[in-house]
Structure formats: C-alpha cells, structure tokens
Length: 97
Image 1 (tube, helix red, strand yellow):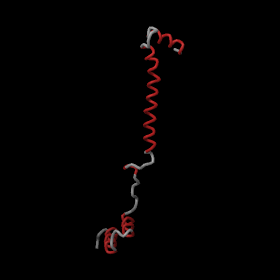
Image 2: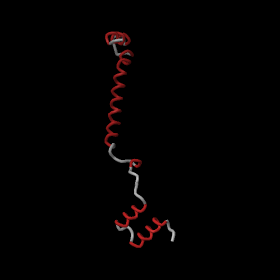
Image 3: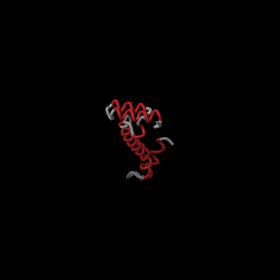
Image 4: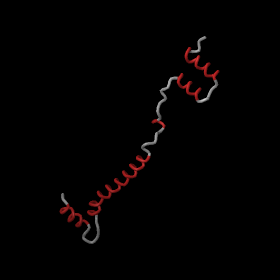
C-alpha cells in the first residue's frame, strides 16, 4: 500500500471533519520510531560517557608472585628488615627449619 492509497483511507475514517482512527494509526509508526530514537540516544550517551572507566570486574588481576609482593612492600617501607627476612624465609623455604 503506498501513500496515495493510505491518505484517502485514513481520511475516510475521520469523516472529513476531524482526525480519526485512520490518521492515528498512520502517525503512530513515526511517533514510535521517534521515541525509540530518543531513548536509544539517551542510553548511548550514558554508556559512552562511562565507557573508559574501569568497573570492579575490569580491574587487572595481580600476577606478581608472593616474593615479588614482599619485595615491593619492603621497598615501599611497609615493613622492617627483620620482618622482610623472616617472611622471605617462610616463603622460600616453606617455613621449614
């Protein structure tokens, strides 16, 4: 059905005096497409504005060994030399004398 056939059909449903069901049905599709485009645009803007920010699940997994973590903590000054040596001995030897 083309537009030339749809307009007379829509016009007859309204009895020439007002807009009837025919015009409402004919205009409902563009209205739905318009609101779909608005909703899609808002969702797209929100998602694109937060795209580069890492979430809780996107954080990198620490691949360092326990000894490397211990060495880094010692280098940062988080522990004393005695603590470092004692913990390194436990990690390397497995706590066996």
